[in-house]
Image 1 (tube, one colour):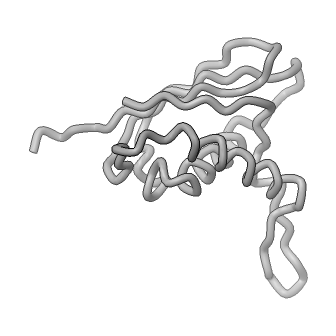
Image 2 (spheres, rainbow, N blue to C red):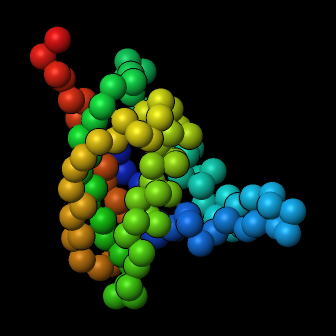
Image 3 (spheres, rainbow, N blue to C red):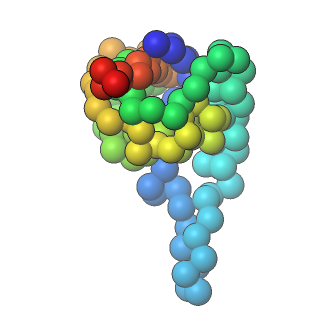
Length: 121
């Protein structure tokens, strides 16, 4: 099992992608800056022996800064993207199931616990 912490308000990804008239897609600059900082936080926490190439269960403890409604699927999409970008998982399709636990309001951030699923082989 691995436990990771991301400090600060988590930004959703799906509304932070710009699509040009020609169909080119790119992230909004403020989201890209957040993503790069988050990937760095995760890389620093990654144990050297960790291999993220098998299906994993996840537990996300989420704390928002305030009581505004948040788009949980967009936030999960951002988190999955960052976990993949940091090399914690080789492909975000390996995050096969788990729980999302909101833990109130205050100092924002998430705690992520990942546990490889061993199929007995």
